[in-house]
Image (cartoon, rainbow, N blue to C red; front, side):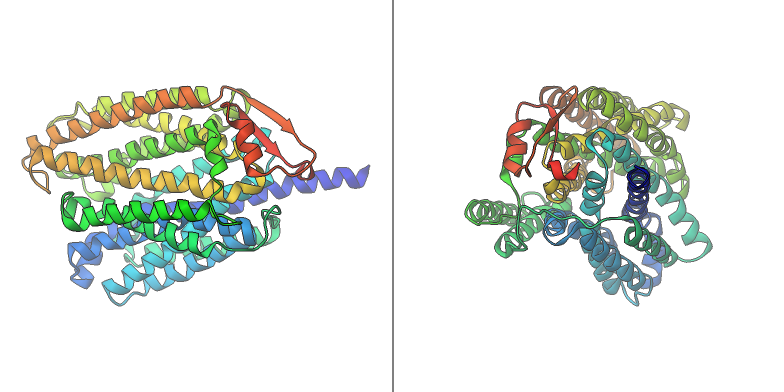
Length: 499
């Protein structure tokens, strides 16, 4: 009895250490989404770089990250999630060092692309490892902590990036990843147990990987460059057409191979589809809002990049505080109530922000920023919990990769679409007059609020209001999990051996 109790204590400690390791890594990944933005002027001066090169210092990371998320998640399921995580962390750390040492803008962009590859292996592994470490009734609390760390990194990024750039060097923003990566590697080696999808062999669907990567690359590249190249240009239309054709070929291949990259049975689950739709929509709204409000505070209100970053803290700190609480709430009442409430709060925030003018004081932005943070906190953790509980735990890697992919594509799509609307309103790529700028900003954010209102309706119709546990005596295939959850219930389906 004593040995059994000691084993329980050890297991309980291990899962929290595993969560700490995953949060270390997630902090590093999310930090690099924002930390470079405030350093761009310094990078431009040192290299005498073009605007296009600076854009690709950001877009190269985003493109590689978004395109390879599903692949990274699936390879983790096949070869081991801890192994995939350690591979991703190592690649990310090495490429961070080469970015800090980059002798030219081309070398910097290449390092950022490799960083995105490392992040694409790390990000789905963090969520799948947490899913495997925690039982279904505790996942909301764990994923809430995970989401709070993500928000903390987004909050710290602009402030830390501004401080390091001004007081040390822009190169230091990459070197700070090295000790964080070392901590994540050590913690995962000691605390994370290896897990993989035991229902499949180690066969890799190379044709599926190639088609999915090529199709998503074409599609995301079109979104990234649409405003610069022109949405009706032959290049952009060709990329969209090529992306659609390649993704259609991917589906055709996946339906025929023995070990497909993506289990389409997932999409028979209303819960899984709803969680991914919410992920796309909320990222569409959040990244679009942060992008244009950052420009507004600097171009219209006259703040420096660092001052603007500090003024976003009411949003991001609300996520840090409330995301763990919303995770605990999800464990009690299910994902639908907090997600619907959160989407409605985000809608209200976007609508209030759409009313800004040339002379709006920051005090008038404080309430909308706080509401945005609270709304996002109510959505992010329950959304992830809903998606992961809707599939069998053996498929957690690819499920996490798909969810993360929709989040990344949604954010890219939001900046691209709202940017196109913004340019159409102002008739200028740089925003025209201040009045033109705020008018276009109002239109863009109003459209964002309509999209998030639709997201609240989708969440209400697809997600469940409670958690129903299903016990099984044998490992459950992904199709069984999907069929069980197809009615919309948040069902945690796990093999008996995992309990």
